[in-house]
Image (cartoon, rainbow, N blue to C red):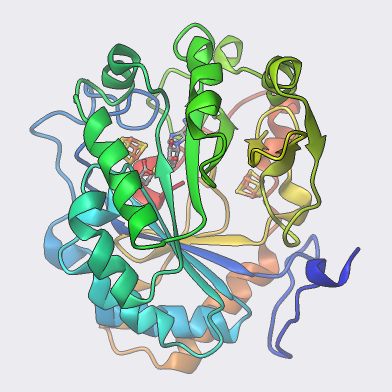
Length: 347
Ligand code: SAM
Ligand code: SF4
Ligand code: SF4
């Protein structure tokens, strides 16, 4: 393990049952979304009468900041804001500025579908946001529209990416979920477009998150297959990980045109180094993307719990954590009946 892989932990940092520290916190700031990606929020379920949270049911910025400080006390150093669509949350930059001001926080990032990015890029940068990840599953207009659930937003997303480049929200990463027979034929186009731009495209294996996306293993395109396809056109070499717990495997183009990443959550599970906790928009703490239940922090928070009380609840939950769903997936006789939905806790 190189120096850059070692996580410096505070004395108070708990380790879970598999000796994993809590290092990354993903905060969902908004359960609503302006897309209806079929693999995440299929329209048949998330229709116009679907009951999303009321604004008062979502954690306020003050509550998120208070809880984040407690997570930081327990070791969290990297914060990622997500959703739903985080840019639908009014005045998000104010929250980012508060999170960036927390002394031990080393990195604040955001994952967005990019539709509102052009509008917000300048204020996001001014608030202290370090970098941005934009989800973009295909550059093909028709495929894009199908994968966003009927929204024709591709050009808006591309304008958002350009705006993020201009204000230097760097490095920009693009996340593309690849499904066999749906968008796997557009992978090479995507690489061609973003080589030599400094933008890092990362391909994500389609996951069985939630209960509503009708996931089928046959739809998963293993990263090894995509790697071979890309390598045949533009030879690749492996790059070292940036930090312990990084989910993407990095590869550089031999001709120096940049890098590409693969997130192989299904074919090469990385639970052993999973240091991520997740806070839902209504204040429930989850220790795994595939969790069936979490720790409600909003109720005690609103009932006047002290910081020490909340800290102990979070610490005890982390100490008991033994999640490794992706490693167990293929051996599970029965899959959990009610997993948490992706839009609710974020990716
Ligand atoms: N709305 C924002 C966006 O799309 O970037 C943030 C939230 S979204 C839930 C976060 C990430 O989860 C996106 O990159 C999305 O592609 C990914 N995601 C959603 N459902 C997925 C699935 N079934 N398998 C793999 N990734 C998924
Ligand atoms: Fe919305 Fe992101 Fe889910 Fe698509 S992946 S429906 S953009 S939350
Ligand atoms: Fe982490 Fe759970 Fe994913 Fe494993 S399945 S990498 S424990 S979030």
